[in-house]
Amino acid sequence: CCKKSCNNIPPQMEWYLINLNATYYPRVEVTSIGKSIEGRNIWQVFIKSSACNEGTAIWLEGGIHAREWISPAVTLHLVNRLARDCSIGKLFDVYIVPMANPDGYEYTWNTNRLWRKNRRIIPDSDCDGVDLNRNWDFDYGVGASDAYCSEIYKGVSAFSEPETLSLKTAMEAVNQEKNLILVIALHSYGQYLLYPYGGRTESAPFTTEMIEKGKVFTRAVSHSHETVFRIDNSGVAYSQASGATDDWAKGVLGVKYVYTLELRDGGSEGFVLGVDKIAPSEEEIWEGMRAILLSVNPSN
Ligand code: 0X9
Ligand code: ZN
Image 1 (cartoon, rainbow, N blue to C red):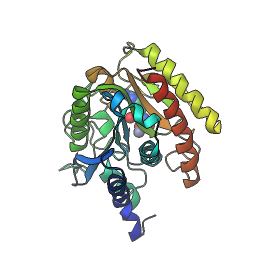
Image 2 (cartoon, rainbow, N blue to C red):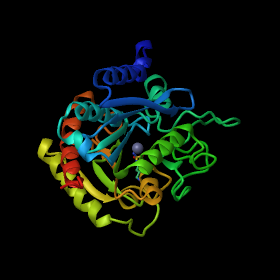
Image 3 (tube, helix red, strand yellow):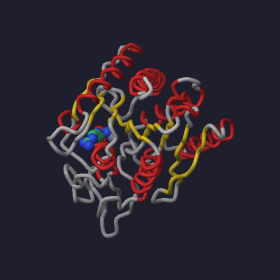
Image 4 (cartoon, rainbow, N blue to C red):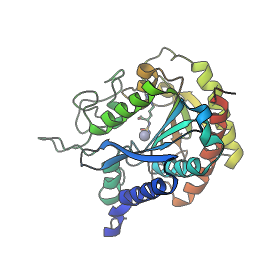
C-alpha cells in the first residue's frame, strides 16, 4: 500500500467532512478543535439535536490508535448515518471526532502499517511517538511506560501531546455547557465493550448501569450480523492501564456512560482487517448505537 496515491487518505476524509458541512450546515457543523504535532487538523463534527432535546450530549472518538483502521472507518459511517437520520440523531447533541491521530494514521499508510502512537519526534532517541491513550490526566502512568520505544510510552507529562490536549479541551467545553451522558472511544480489535476503570480495581460510579446499557448495545449488534461482543471491565479484559480517554471521561468529567469499544475482529485478521469487513462492521455498530441511544435517552 505504499504507492504515492496512498498518502492521500487523511485529505479524503477532510474532503468528505467539508462536503458534509456544506450539505447539512447549520444542522451539522464541522470545526477543527486543534492541530496534531505535524500540523494536521483534528476535526470535530457536531450534529445538533432538535430544539426540544437540546442540552443532552454524546461524544464519540475514533482513530486515536493509528493502526486500528476500522475505528475511523466505522466512526465516519456513524457520522454519515447520524447526519442523515431524522430520529435517533435528533435526540442528542452529538459530537464526533473521527480521526483523533491523523499523523499516526498517515504514517500507517506510508511507512509502517502497524504504527500505534502519534508522531512526536523524540530528540536523542531512535524511537518516536507517544501513546495517546496513555497521555490523559487520570491515573496517569498506571499501566504505561517511561520508555520512548514502548508502544505504551506515556509522554513527558499528562496532556503533553497536542492531540490529547485538543480532545480534552473540546470535551470539557461540551461538558460545561451540556449534560454529557455518553462517551464511546472506538478501537480495535477484540469485539469487546469495555467499561472503566482500567487503572484501578474499585468500581466506577454507575457500573451497574453501564453494564445494563452495554447489554442493550451488544444485543442489538448481534442481531445485525451475529457478531458476539463481550462486555467487561477494561482492566480485567485488557491490561490494567489508565491515562486513557475512558478513565478520564469517567473519573474527571464524571460522565455516566463511558465505554471503550474494541471493534472487529476476534484476532484472525486483527489490525489488518479486510476491507470486506467495513460494511458489516459499520452496519452492526450502527444498530448497537441506535439501541443504546434510545435506551440512555433521558426523556424516555
Ligand atoms: O490499551 C488500550 O489503549 C485499549 N486497547 S487497544 O488494543 N485498542 O490498544 C484499551 C483501553 C481500555 N481502557 C483503559 N485501559 N482505561
Ligand atoms: Zn486502541
